[in-house]
Image (cartoon, rainbow, N blue to C red; front, top):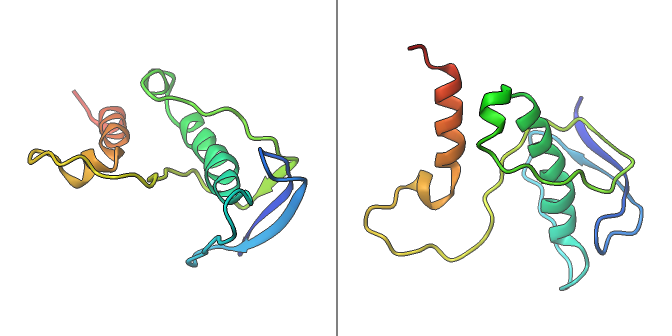
Length: 118
């Protein structure tokens, strides 16, 4: 599938939005404050992708991850499991790594523990 298709997105400021986005490309979402950019990117697309990602893990691994609520959307097609990096100021800790600063460390820890062999 060459595109991500969203039908009937009604999360927060979104009022039944339908759109198609290209896959395997850099997509930028712009607009004025309060127009629904974060609602589309994080609360709709990422929430559904993260939900699919968590469902792909074992029940044991799922217990360690926070699951987002299912977004208010009629359908999303062509979406792969997803993780996201939220925008925020980084804490200045000399012991931080890229993984801890972006909070992907928790996901990597669960992934490695589910794939590892005792």
